Image (cartoon, rainbow, N blue to C red; front, side):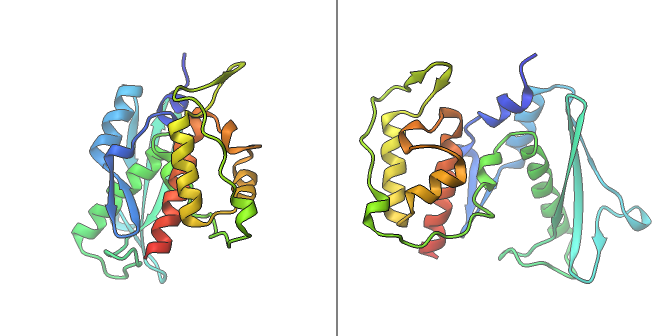
Length: 209
């Protein structure tokens, strides 16, 4: 049986990502639909805390937890209840708790592959400019993916867009390649392209903020 993780991870979700300021969110109805299409038996559960409430109050804030089960594998995600600026709330409303549960569900689904690349840049530090030499633009490849053995690499159009983002964000190419474990921009596997683009786009948004 084909890995559901592989199928979900390779799904391009860009058209279903909502932007709110510098933050990106994947539509939860879309995430649930793709999850059930990939595994009709997939299920999820909202964790219950004290007094059977779907949230836990702490001194640091209020937290929710959602567990998603795919092909018998259960993975859970804990998420703080946040305001519109992604700041923790100590006394959230019912609406804010419900919104956090939806976001938590989407992140729990992401643990199974869908839209995982959206969050790839959350823990990637901003890279300082190391000089123009380190940001040399690679030569675009043909418009179709290039195969080398069993690996399918990015297209020339995708490479061109990545080069554009690298230039705009003044990203150190070598540090970017080291972070992802690639030897060159031209040899980025097709399945990893969206993850690289998302990281660079996140950096661009942070610079513009």
